Length: 429
Image (cartoon, rainbow, N blue to C red; front, side, top):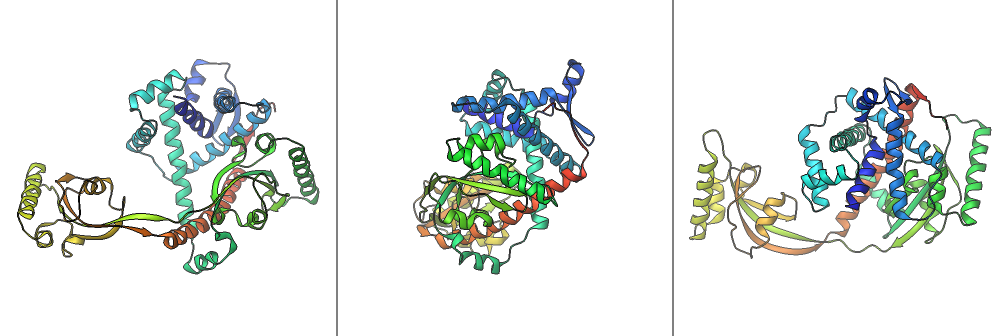
């Protein structure tokens, strides 16, 4: 269950086991407040728990461990930032229902090929409270929703911007595995602060060139959000690389470390950990028609099933599918089209239709199946392989532009929240 332990460590380290606060205050009078964030507090036990979670990941990787004081500082900063976002999300009415947390837990269990009870047992065995785990998942979902709402309200991308972006060098094919190191600057930094930051990052680069691993340098020195992950940004297409670094990476190769670059929030360095070529995007598309019978207050579940069974029997015996759809389908969007769904990729209309069509041959009609809409039958008309590289590249370009704007805007939003908040760091470091 190493994968589950790693996941739990990430969730607890990123979000922080905030649910332990009340319990700790009641059961351990020695548990001290390590930071005050507006009306909330972060306890020493929370910091210790998050620190141990992160260190457990480092130990599984092998190699030298980063200094304890460095990791504790990074973890505390992350807990403070997360606390601010959770508070803002609650203040703006963002609520995550129990059913949404249940779905997230179920998804994690499925990813690990176990059921929820086995997930619970594994977490408890590895020292994680299942209720705390649910609480941190809820907080994470709440913050994700806060970010999504922020992006939706603040970030827009026009077709013209997409067109211009697609003609730039940033959209060339291929992907890079990037790592990032940031030495931050305060707003309205003085010339002395700028020079101090510049000297610091240049010294760090000298250490890296002399043999210090970039990941170790990021853990030790970086003020970026991925510092605890060794600055790892993962695999990114060229169009996903921040515009400030586009020209830098164009001339770099695997293993290279860039020169320091001044940005709005400080000095940056980039490391290329790997490169790979992009391939064409070929997708499977289906053409199908369907009929839906929806249960209502007047039509019970059993009667709806009987009706769809009768329709299928009639079609198998020779009735025209399109005519039956026009006369009987409760999907008013497609009924007048004879139930025609057109050409679509797998997943467009949900897993129910995909699963029903998979065993069919062209011209065959599925057995009745249930979705959230009602009882269905589907007729597979055709299947084809299509090169969707152009469409996908355009969608990716739009997504990249949105993410670029969002990253900068949200970073400013976080800095503004921190500037406006009352934060008292009581740690000794």
